[in-house]
Length: 306
Image (cartoon, rainbow, N blue to C red; front, side, top):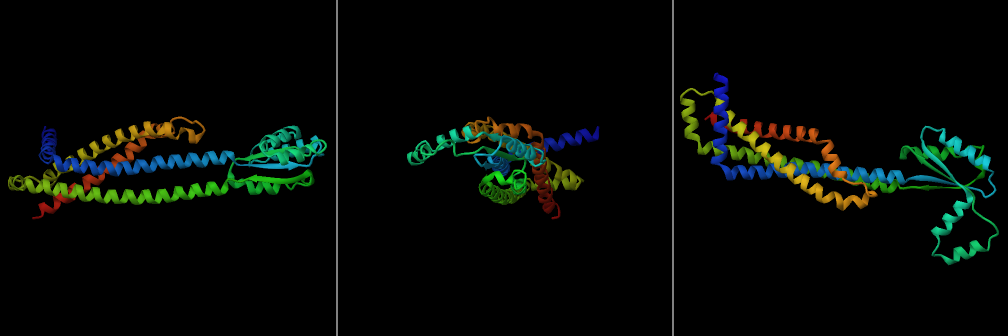
């Protein structure tokens, strides 16, 4: 019975500490909530950047233009050879007639090109082989593979629709945002630690006589510390709830805004946070609870040594 009674007394004392210093507690909750929001903002930005890179990678391809007199057998051989490579995701042959229609459509507003095209007898364009790789890093290898002597002599040009520079820029921005985010998290973690530490110190100062009496009657240092540690964990839990509510509201507002950027893919942020909710709550809640518990324990220890 002693342990449940002691536990209950610790909880009651922690609640009293919380209510007696409500404004300091609210300040601490505000700062801890900002710290958690900085982490979740970083996660959301990473999701958007990763999705952007993924969409750009899907748009990369190699367009291989064959001569107008290339036999169909050579085209099929080139397609078969490329699809047999493990680095190739897909390969599609665009017939010369479709290539001509696509060319006219792309230059519909340029009368000079259309006039010059009309003066040429027949279709000057050949078939096109469009190749998509599984990884963007595979394209240099595929460009070399196209030099195959069985069909390489029929190739007039290769147009590497290269979004690699754009992807590299997005990845560089992603790395910079991550570094900035980590720095922001560190700053808020430091502020949180200092505010929690000072909140506990002020709370102890206001109850120094009560703590002195507890020590005189034989209360152990751990028994004196525990109410403040429990109070810190309570502050961490409330901060986690507030930050979760804010994240859900911001996500509900932001998802429709960014949906057109990703070809209409709905609920990108909501899907991510919903899928990773146990992991996010466990990591962030555990880290925050550990932070405030350690700072509370250390702050009380300073006064117990007096």
